[in-house]
Image (cartoon, rainbow, N blue to C red; front, side):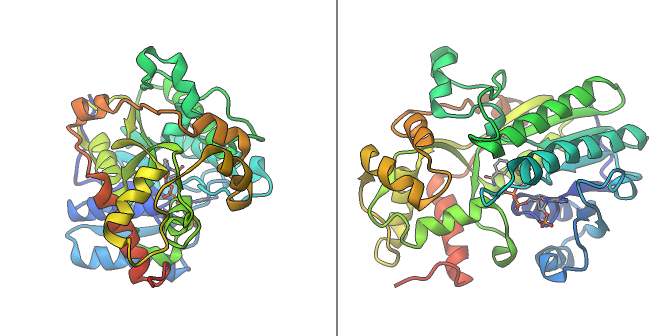
Length: 355
Ligand code: NAP
């Protein structure tokens, strides 16, 4: 049980990010003082959406410069904070060297932030943004789970630098977080493990998250021949922010939390877009057959390797979200709202063009 004083500043690492943007908004609207740690505070265009939110909210925002790979970089931003949100970690498939570009920032960054918590006496709780990819690698992993349902007891044990390196980075980073947390007893660790996050970005034009690339692909004709039944858990970015907020401020929040609204697949997500944009966007009507995706997948997207398609297409995925509903009282938005609000934001910014 950890009670957080709402009048103390709250640190958010990676505050420029897609997920962090909505968390910072929530904190500012609740009247918190947010210490926003960003890689480069001089890039004003990456902060404009946060400044706009802060201008209308009762809380205040203060920026700090910090890079995950610089030891001690987060100390100044953490001073005086009881609550630390560690969201910063690269989420991209556009990489050449997975060790350097994904694993090192994820693991060294988590080590850096949590070791800083060890030397900043005000810290009482750290909420780390992990992922459902720390729980499973492929939908086929559910075969080892009772009733085929994956819960917080599971760990991804098959990601590697060659196959799903982003998932490897998140798994190793979360394991490191628990290791550091267990070696001390002043602050508590809680992890939020979101599935695939979608929904409207606060900063559509300056966003590096892979979520945005995939949403853009769903509207730009990449799937005009049909959507694959590739299984995925999905959750609205606004619900992910709410989950972070509750994990921080609900005193009994404890352990890992699968943060996933829906067990679904790309076909169902595509159909949710067709409901609203069937006449305006080049959206496929049906499901792409597995054999076709096996041939075409690797050309559409690097992530769609044949192994990935084999292990995730037409394989049901069941992520159990009951713990976060019970402990933190979370509810999740309907999938269609998430898909349509997200696409609408990209259309309004001219990132996805309508006919
Ligand atoms: P994002 O928009 O790309 O945010 C990533 C953040 O990490 C950015 O603020 C980025 O800063 C920061 N960052 C990256 N490398 C850094 C470095 N070396 N030093 C300091 N900051 C660095 O992606 P996102 O989707 O919001 O992801 C945020 C978190 O959620 C990540 O931990 C991700 O693994 C997790 N997550 C995301 C999803 C999803 O579907 N989106 C699902 C589960 C978990 P810059 O702006 O300077 O690049």
